[in-house]
Length: 386
Image (cartoon, rainbow, N blue to C red; front, side):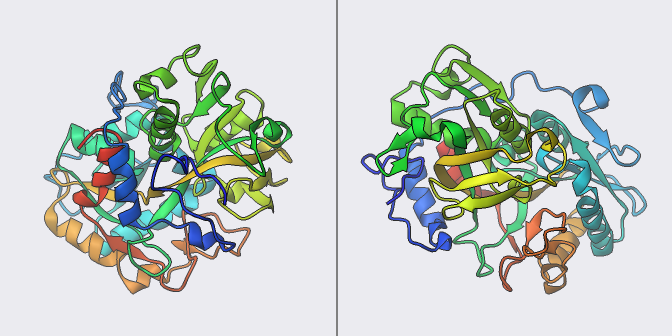
């Protein structure tokens, strides 16, 4: 049995891990049970100091002209979609433009893609209507919805059966392979020895890069709140933020942090699995020799997973005040169609090492599926935001 973030002696989210990595996928029912345990935890001040996304000084960059996002748009006014830093890299520009073209095909309006280098800026853009569509992590979505209830989840990536029961990705805590023995626990690894280490999170508004790992650490070590994890010299000797999952991984791989939190879906195209089962404790990964920015300086470096937990798949959401219902309905209908599900430019072939994309066609049934706001209540409970 391997250890996930959650201690097998203390909570019901642990279960034996089968030899097939696919057996690690957690049902939403199990996620709900686990989030109830952590429901009292709070992430106060997660959006303090947000800036208005009005220019490059805030970390917001547009690939086209700006748009007002005031909801009174005519057919020629662009629909603006904003992306988190993890999906804003130059090597994903083609994937973003495919989505822009799909939006135009769905509703006949041009689409602009806005990239960011800051999670809070992305959230602010969709909450204020600067953008009408956003692809957010589930914690970021909850934050945006709290700022403006008009921000509503529309659809998300399905599980491998084309449904929502196993629609999860993974949040990891990892350490450098050369230091992994410091985190040994019998025949496996654990997070027991991370107190006093230097640690990198993604962002205070990242689900898999902060909310899930911090809630786990708070529960495991009996801390009062996640605030103790945000200040250097409190629980961790030093706290860093990568501002993207790639950035947090680089903080670890470059030696700036002893341990780091980041997910699988935003970084695994840069790594090769060299030992163990994918997305299990003890799995060892190496940075590919052809990995692009920001991994050029850490080619060949290796990390080991010492903790892992599932996270509800991220939604594509609308600001319903800024985007007319007719456009929303057309976009949902098209993106949840077989045409999009079978488009290799949107759902890329996971066996194609040259493909640059955001979603993988891991099974013939993989597609986008409609969701609503209530589907993300487990995330609210996890963060005390219900």
